[in-house]
Amino acid sequence: MIEFQDPCPGNPTFDYKNQLFFVYLPTNYQNSTNQTLGIIAFISHTNQWGMWSLYKSIFDERNLIYFVAQNTGNMVEDAVRQAAAMAGITYFNSALTLDPTRIYAAGLSGGGRIACQMAWDNGTLISGAIGVCGCDYKRLVTLSAGADPSYGFYVSSPVPDDVLRLTTRVVIVTGSEDFLQTNLNDIYNNGIVADNLTGWIIDVTGMGHEMADYITFDQALTLVDNNPPKCNFPCKDCSESRYNCTECFDSLEMTLVFNETTTMGSCVALCEEGTYAYNGYCINECPEWTAISNDGYQDTCIERTEISSETTSDESEQGETTSEE
Image (cartoon, rainbow, N blue to C red):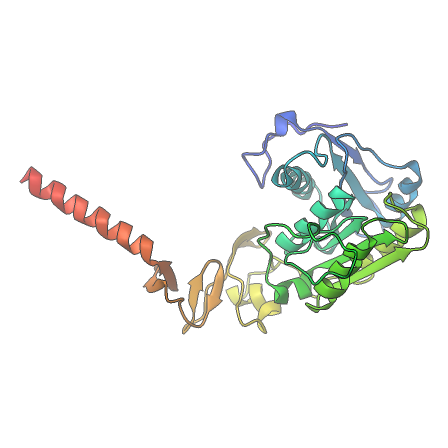
């Protein structure tokens, strides 16, 4: 078990002093010549979880760091569970050279639901997820007879589908004796496949609601490892032009707007002329409840409530000036 001694690079509010992590480092993680270094954040359904000894050879052969945040079981709020897993990834990503195409989340049961949530909501970082007997989807899906209508949906803030298609892969593992088999097949067929995202389902005969065996888990990792993302995010080279940062997303109707620090420096993408920045995207027209503005760099859409508050503030300042006179 380890406990990080410094504030989390990506989340300064993370309570790092009270979070333990089980960590397994692959044998040759510092000098492997066969495979780039990756990482897998495992989210358990229970508060204490380590690693099956059989899995050691999987992580060694695939050069994957494996870690589990402790005390983040099913009774803990989803946001806390996500934050702990994301913090672990951020710590390792800041200290080691991780392959951005091999940053994975995985989990069992309720932990699988969190792993899938991380993929949909953080698809530009989490390049693959494995949900073992558990997976949430970013929207409601059509359910088959016998499915649990209360399962599988969460209050999401997903990355747009066009981006997920380029960056994220999800594997769902279930079995004929898993009580969530119907729900998980519906999420795969009526969610992932219907939205034309990249994913697979492994339905194991005789498997119950339990951890995947060695062969099945290795098969799931093979699927994500052998099908790398079509685009890495953020860009790695901003030396020529800021538009290099978004070349993978040129086909999108809404181009991502971001400001990320990379090894090449600060990489800033702005909306092109004739479009408007709104809530992190470039759109062709401002919504009717907004007004056109400019932040000094690009045209933007701002909420009319912001305009009202600014006007009120200006009027208040004018009133104070008048009273002083």
